[in-house]
Length: 356
Image (cartoon, rainbow, N blue to C red; front, side):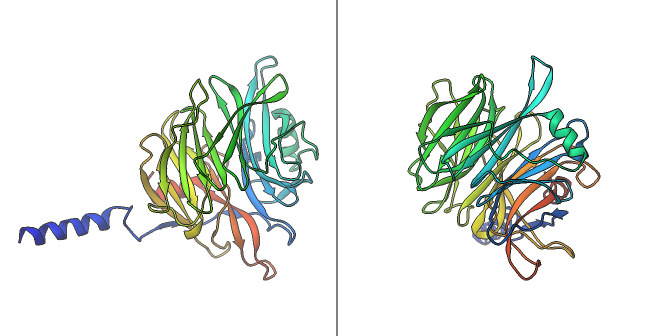
């Protein structure tokens, strides 16, 4: 009798635990961008926050065969830069203490030149253009440095010791480079291997916790965390999750949902199941839950996601708590041609649905 009661108790404990539950929570997109042309391939978004007029914030989205699109918060195209095969994109906005104004630094991993590209703009310039519903990056970046490998992923950060930095990952290889920006130049300060990865793309840097999160694709399917130390040694990675755990197929896009300065969540695209995994932002990086993006009456669902980005601040009535931008690997409904685009999700919907 005791064993039977114990078995029943364990059974109901498993059912109530989100790790074991098949009841995946879902939300739907509020807006979407046009799908990219047939010769294009949408991949990675980055959100620029307009501190003066939040409703005029803009989204950068890469077409990794052609260049970089700019979108408004309705998903409408407001600009395009024929900047080459820019696969991933990330940015940081920092205050220039010399003039007491903000500048935005936009990094791109460019497969055309196998380079790390950097665009630098005053926030005032982007703000004025966004008010006119128009902004495009220049075709040529302000700074471009050779990586000497096939440039693939990129993520930016502002580190309390190093200042403005960017990590670049290698296509068809395990190498990761760390670049530092100073005096209008980029300098390579470290190169390391992401385990024995065949290929790494998705990454995000947690500024406050000095942690690089990075995914490994293809043969293994692993998400790792590297704590940045003063010696710049990256020889003690922490494995967060694998295909033996909660990852299906490739782990791709990574983004941080901040709750406060150091707490929050790591969101990872689990491409094989078209879902998004949620982990603790800090060690031991426990798996918490997962969600999917399903269709509504107007916008189709999301599948096979590459890049994602998150901003958790008020933008407008559609995004009162912030926005999640995800790449959709197979947008449906436009002229019976399935191509990629970007979907906008309300962070409020996710917070309510998953009780975050």
